Length: 300
Ligand code: SF4
Ligand code: ZN
Image (cartoon, rainbow, N blue to C red; front, side, top):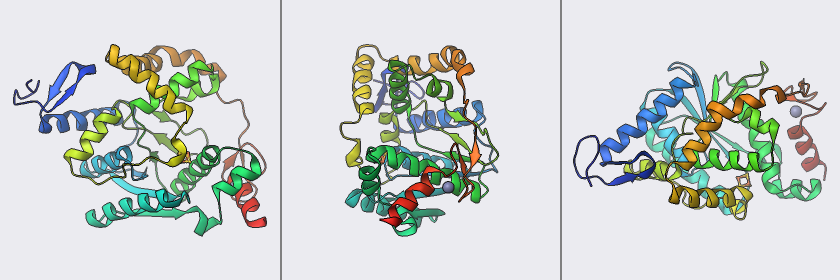
């Protein structure tokens, strides 16, 4: 099979685009997709400070690398969540990449810095580790971005992630989530920094190609808590559909963003936003969940 762009021998076939690329033309396609997503959705401009959240996995490593290569003003942030060896290994990968490429990196360690333990919180609050972990991550993304004067927080969510989230939200008719789902979560409060997903049209497989072709080291293993997660089941279902009918995920997501999302706009945030009495970050209660977590972990 030949590359659709230069007619050399193709090494990558993208069935959903009915296209095949050689390595160079794939990287050209990948870069154009990312730049188009940033511009089309007005995620950020060249000079603006962007906080890129990295986990050591292929998606966030690809995002970090391409934004640096394209000359964006990025600082990466890694959060050590205290998930045993997985956290230690992922931190090593991220730190090594920053050091080798001389890139700025902020490292937050929830245990060392705040005394937080997601397992203790999970047990005390009877919430899943993922639910606790998600709250902590969201808080720190915003807090670090706000304190550091960043314009946006960028994450490595890909097309597979976004289609699976949409699938779950539709199955459960989560109107509030459907109203907010998209490549940009705009700033709705002066202290809430915009969240953006520049890789939302690229698949896991395409991100994998990107890191392999660029010889970027990444952590192959997933977080142990992702095993058995509902989102994985949704991804499997969508993968089956995609196999039968390439382009399903893309049509599902882009169709929703273009035609479906507008029907949920009237259910947008009815919650009153306040500032936490301790830390000043935005919350819907007197004390934000992060400050509550810190209190619980340091009390017992
Ligand atoms: Fe956190 Fe769950 Fe993701 Fe692991 S899988 S990083 S525990 S949200
Ligand atoms: Zn707080």
